[in-house]
Length: 275
Image (cartoon, rainbow, N blue to C red; front, side):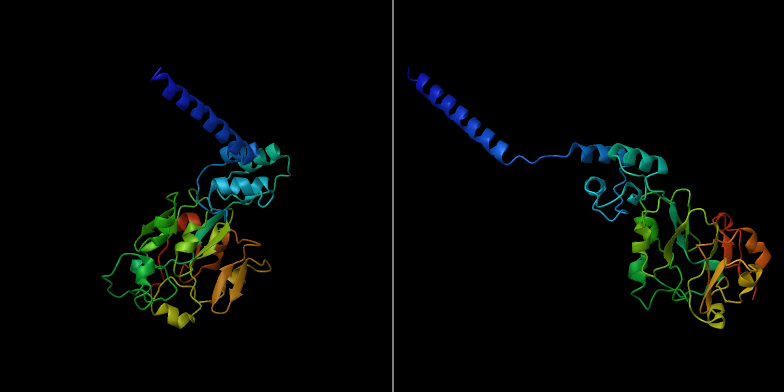
């Protein structure tokens, strides 16, 4: 009898607490929309943040709530977008793949640079008089963008960041990481770009870089009546509303090779002006 009383007491207390916990769980239960978990499973799961949400789970919640569309995921393939849209019963938006473009072709052999023995990081280097590169608008080449890329799409070659666009998913992490604001997003279908971002006059650029755009406008003239190129002060840019064909590079004969085809640029096929 001495041991029976404590056992009964503990048992009754356990039942009482169980009932209390059950009531509390019932009252404060949070309804979970199963569609959120399903959409999250259908996403690639990169958690890159390129969609503007905190991660894939947050993005899935936004899609189900109508605050985002499946096409807002930069990593989703068109097939993924269609699958998620069909699951939710919404219209699938057409999605044009965008990739990163580093608007600089000034590698070590073609640029003037000063000695730099500081931290090998672009954000740190830019704090020291804007970096060691003669061009204040050029790629510093310490790889902050490459480190920010979770997909290994950026390579540092001869002190210059180059993008392997077949690996780029368009998450834009590199855009935020570049302290020079050199990286922009362009349609993946566009192949011809001006690899320069300096607004300086041509003569100023040529003193520090052999591959800078000097705004000679040969590419504009070679475009003829086609509106392939845009003039922006002392800089010419590709018009991505009407992207220039690869053939324009040869037709224009750019004297500094700032106008390039991306597949040849990644191979290192271009040199700079001879003088």
